[in-house]
Length: 108
Image 1 (cartoon, helix red, strand yellow):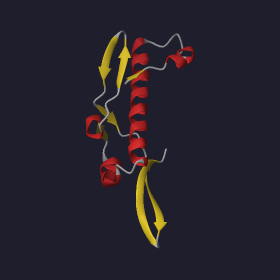
Image 2: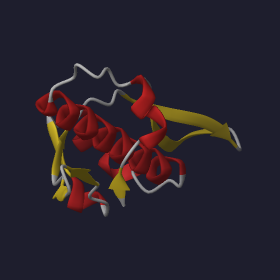
Image 3: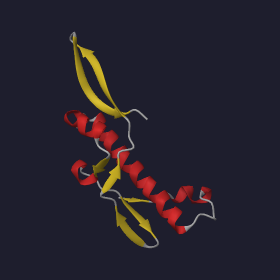
């Protein structure tokens, strides 16, 4: 999946340099990866990895089954590692009188 946000193009200042445009697209790719993590968390697929998620400074995209890409100046760039800018909270519910860990969801 390529990260492009043509609907936001009208709000990107014309004075933005090419380096800044690349950084903006990179931020969109990080956001897309965060959305992938959220989908995994809500499906209950990250329950055994919460310590990794909470403590890692960077996350290897391939370990989570999704590596976003972005297109800049006509070239495709794959993103393999993203900074862990996501705040994670463990959600617990009570079921049958027991507290059970059900998912990890981004808290920000």
